[in-house]
Amino acid sequence: MATQRARSQQSRPRLIERFYLDESGNSGDAALPGAAFDFGGQQIFALACVGCADAAGLGVELARLASRYRIKSTELKSTALIGKPGVAADIAAFLETAQLPLFIEVVDKRFFVAAHMINHLIMPAVGDVDFSPKGQWLRNVFAEYLYREAPSAAFATFVEACGSPSNFSVETCFDAALVWLKQVSAEDEIGLGVLHFADDSFNDFRSEAAKSDQAFERYLPIPDKGCSGKRIWMLPSLTSLTNIYARVNLYRRGAMTGVTLLHDEQLHFEAILHDAKGDA
Image: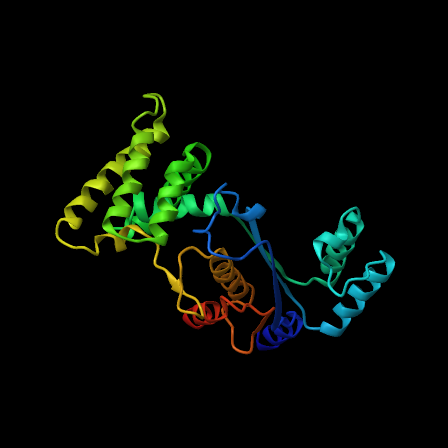
């Protein structure tokens, strides 16, 4: 038995320790969507992570692809790959052949805001049931409903409250959401469900606001602080990094000692990402 166990351990592939990350799309605060609510034309954020034990070999492969497809830029920027779908196909084939772990997080920023509205404004957590699989499923259903159906005013008042947090600004959020929700059809079961929770949450808020000027804090996301001390309310890069860290941890079966994550410089968010990694 001991011999068989030793052979099994020897045949198990050595887990990779170095992981390279890079993002696509503006990684900034989702509470700054712009006047058109289009996030500066970058509605989607993505963070990709590749594990690699042979960085030199990976560099050789990328150099080969750059030469083959006549790419002159020092990086394989997506803008340089327009009309060259073979590059992505070849990279995918290389990763599969080399059996390199690949993790990708994609964030639709409008949905990201909708999820924060559900989790903080409409359904603030009150107990363990809120973190159960069924509870998370319901929150996702409601967030998707907001994403599809909510008017711009409902989103706008929420992001404005993040910029100027107060009891008054949060009450304005509830007013905008409830005006819309009270118009939903009697056959709209999901809309009526959101209305039920929003109405209950608003009643709780008014009760708390009568006692405290800081009642709004429970109904807005917890902000992070950038390097200049400025508050940042909803950072998709932070959520994506947290999820990828968890996925790397799963891939490594919980053995994170010796793991190195390499990311390009993040001047505005470096401290936040570093602190989040330390808390993981």
